[in-house]
Amino acid sequence: MATKTSTPSRADAVLAALAPDDELTDAEIVTRMVPLHRGQVVPARVRLEKLGLVELVGQNAAGHKVWRRTPLDRIQAAKEEATVRRKPLGKKLAGRGVNERVQAVAELLEDEHVNRELREQMERARAWRSARARAQEAHAESEAQRRERKRELRKAEEEKSAYLNLLKVHDGLREAVNALLDIRAFIREELDRQDREEELRIPLDRWPEVAKNVGEVLIVSGGVWFDLASAAGKDPEHCPLCGARTAREPKALPEGIIEAEVVTDDQAQNLKLPDDGEDG
Image (cartoon, rainbow, N blue to C red; front, side, top):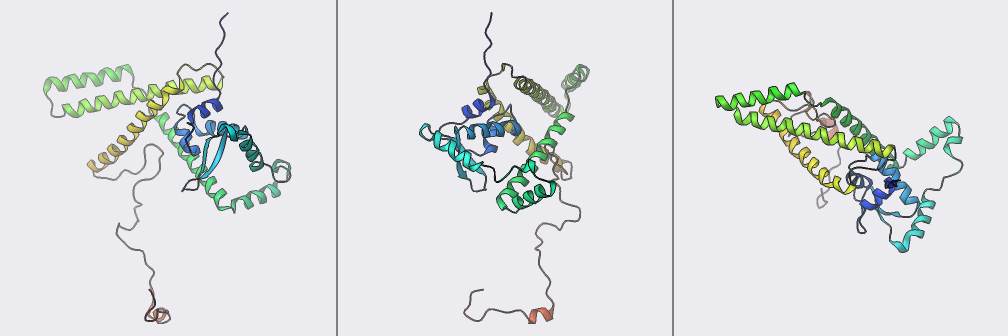
């Protein structure tokens, strides 16, 4: 009877993605875990933190928490620090009344760091949902559509059409879309296997190179997207990835306009000017 190879847990995968000298934010860890999304990676990192295997280093310049793989001689200390850091204050919120819970949330939101982190998480979640929804709009072309595309290309080659090079590039672009759709299908199948706790078919160390290439596609595509808009004589109105508005608002002031406050003559007379010798 064949023995089943155990599938590495998400926590194991996150720990494996952290080199001993790495100091990364949650967002940076997520970029290394291409098959997984933030909602899967962060809980795994939290489990590692509770076990003392990952510890908090501090915050980066943007105020985001930075994590690292805990040195062996600090695992027990890191576990104790994590316990203190996550120790509940008073009785659990779930056991309180609605008004008490609302008040507790309001008090937490008064903390600048908590408020900023929450806003950033909500913005990332909205962008993520939007990007996934827009990805669903892309679809693989049918075999009939593919045959028609290839027929038009052969016809243009025979007629030596002035648009031949453009048609060739467009043909390659459609093939690239098909390749990305195939990659997404592979990833979604792996995610389904993870949810079912089945053995993965694609080694985790194969995904970083795919992530690098997909990142290159996004960067180049962004430039092409804006260049296409310029060629068409209009600004792109929305980002095709997240749906965020990129065009200037119709009533926005032209670039170069300096915003200033109008001061009347009477108000000017009451302004205190610096004395001679003072800076200003």
